[in-house]
Image 1 (tube, rainbow, N blue to C red):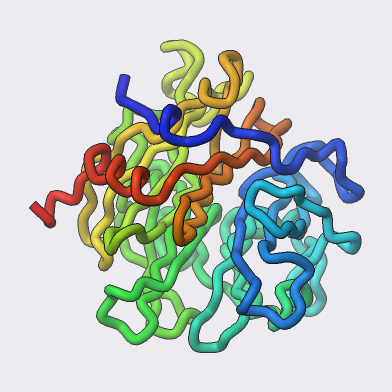
Image 2 (image 1 turned 135 degrees about the vertical axis):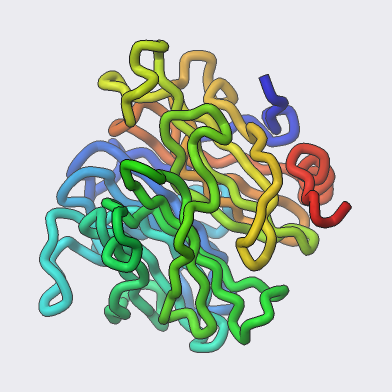
Length: 330
């Protein structure tokens, strides 16, 4: 088994759980996205905003806030910020998988989310709470043969040659080429998808990979993602086990133009949270000056909580250089 960062990170602790929330339609939380907003927004509720959602319908893009990455996290009392009905923009069965980032040119929060599964949408906000619809970022019609375009995260990369350096990664499902796809942007609003998957499940011997999280650390670009594994060989061909998959977090180095990547390696296993934990998924890495915080979801699929752990930044950077090297830097 590949090494993991369990010994480098602090033990994961629960940051947010559905049973303690006012808005809790499914008793399940996925896809945490944490943004440091102090110094960016005027009079924010806290130094950090966490966006999250239930998986199943009706979904709903929600917000919690805190003054430290480890919490305590406080639920925004008027969740959801974005619901499945947003006239005249859309009327769908559910919205989910929020990812927030700071749009450097427009100086506002940009929010990615999906609904339905075929479409990743975007919205923009001056205060991180009240959003204006920004249209479709990517959808299946842009890549013939794909049936899903969701679980998207993005970043603006200083090393990209374009003026904005926008990189967007998402899960694209097709019968022939499922995997993690990419898109590029020069303005952060219009995204041009790349035709072929950047990463596929077979590269880690998984049945399914999703929730890619691009991040930059010491000038290198990495992508963290989760990989699902069956409970038995009989279920190997299934996209998802009926009882739910067993899931770990992987990472690989990625070229800033998304043209190539290094070998994926197991970053954090499901057992890091508890010996009998079945799933650690939806990674979101928050890179601070002195530490790196890893937010993720833990527990059984469709009954998950948000967890967080952290590691010293310098030690984590050294660990990644060995675990997930950049072949083009050699």
